[in-house]
Amino acid sequence: MAQQEKRACLATALVFSLLWLAGCASSAPPIKKSVPEQQDRSSLSQFGKSDLDRMADVQMRENTQSLRLLMTKLYKRNPRELRKSTSGTAEEMVDWVFEGGQGWRFPKINNVQGTEAIQLAFQPEYQGDRVLPFIVGLETMLIKAHGGKEEFFYTDSLDPQSIYNAARNVEIAAWKLSNARDSQGQLYLLTNELNDSGHNLSFEREFGKIIGRTDLYAMTLSEKSQRTISRIALSFATALFLPF
Image (tube, rainbow, N blue to C red):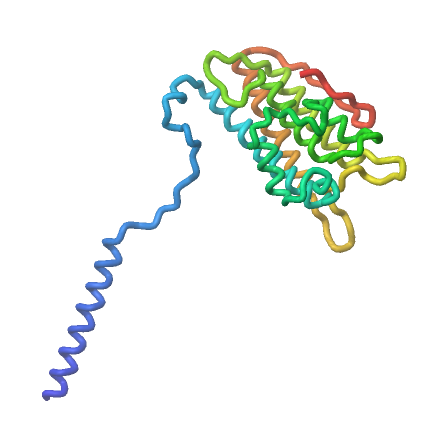
């Protein structure tokens, strides 16, 4: 009998222990994963922005991130180009280009910007780092197409045609990157891989994201401002960069 009572006491103690642990677990705050937000989302600057301004901010920020990724990937795929500019890593070079405070003017490429810089990357006589003018050209072209700005407010007036043309220029630049060759028939810059071991189309996908974002904003801006966009059919083999 004493043995049965002892077992009953142990069982009761075990039940209370389990109930106590369950209570502690239920009272603990749930683990939450926060979604990243823009740093200035709650700042006073947001009061001077329309929905279209915020959309432009996001589009420019995301396109810049895509170009940073493309630049890193190009250097890793073409290490000889990186060595022409630095003995550091691809990531260090990308940080220096985008955050080094040069104002997008680089003496190594004669301070050229926009489509002129993109074209420099594929000139046979150019012997410097070809990745640098290609990415600098794309970034500065997109900035110029957006009125020379990277952040937007009510007072800004953007031209949807310029932004649409910039998206077409990104298409042309991507085509040149995959097709332009030197006198020996070699690509100036290696990108996507198509071989027996597998396919790597990550460059193509990233360019597609930039073009899609830019087109979407151009169309939205055109609809909102009631300004018509003249659509242009490109022939990539002979395509010239469009004014923006």
